[in-house]
Image 1 (cartoon, rainbow, N blue to C red):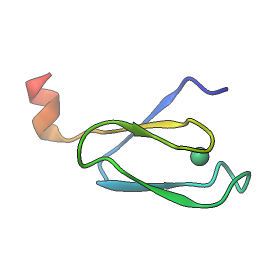
Image 2 (image 1 turned 30 degrees about the vertical axis):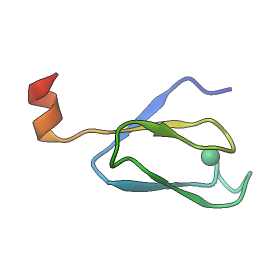
Image 3 (image 1 turned 90 degrees about the vertical axis):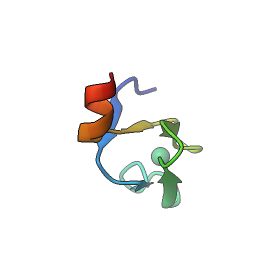
Image 4 (image 1 turned 120 degrees about the vertical axis):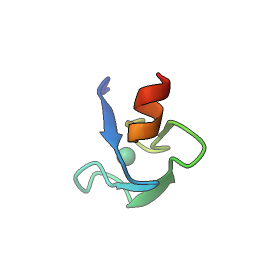
Length: 53
Ligand SMILES: [Zn+2]
């Protein structure tokens, strides 16, 4: 079980957990999301929401 949240500036990220599960694409357009297979969390980080935070 992982606890790290991956920060990215992409609207869509992919995850395969280093080949441990099928490659899936995860949309972050509506906010933080997580991989349905491995539970890895991703958050989209942009200059805009850094200011807002
Ligand atoms: Zn995954």
